[in-house]
Length: 272
Ligand code: G3P
Image (tube, rainbow, N blue to C red; front, side, top):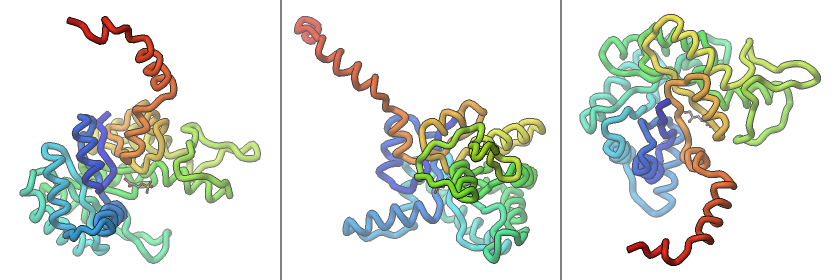
């Protein structure tokens, strides 16, 4: 499984690349806001355009997602082309993030412009990461429309299932892959019992039909979810830096390290 870093924080991105574990970067407007506010808060003057260029250079040779801000089909296509033109020349690694259904009025409204933009940009040889995917059907349509990547949001489906059922939770709490029972009932959202179940169904459907899009397991909140994403065959997991760091930790590693250090005899430490 490839690992993307889900961050717009240049220091985090650099660190993940220095460790040799990052195969790409995903950003979104919220991540860019957070990263830029952090730099501005530290007294820096910053232009988002030069900041994005810095990210693209660090990630050179691997894909970086940049999301559109427009909501109409025409607007998203125009902006997607503009972003690609502005930024792809930096390191030839840009893909454009398009929401699968950018409806803002109400959740039930159907906004076909997302899927149209996926098709039009993909047809213009601009790789698209189709984002905010919450059903395998959305993933199937995005893949058929030509998206290079589809991004099911695992953690947010877990949040949604818990909220709908009045279950309190913390953002990084583990949610079982096989679902959560309450009062003897398995909780679900239209047949999806967990975020990882959503990822697994997206992968299975795309692979059933040899569709080229790669599934990016997104909105991952803890290390166990990353493991499960890998076990269900996600092609890519995009992971926040803190979770990548957590993947390196275990109490027994720490304890074992202390014991080994205590046992180093002088001769061994000073081999000649
Ligand atoms: O890649 C999508 C991701 O940034 C959303 O994560 O934790 O805000 O649901 P989260």
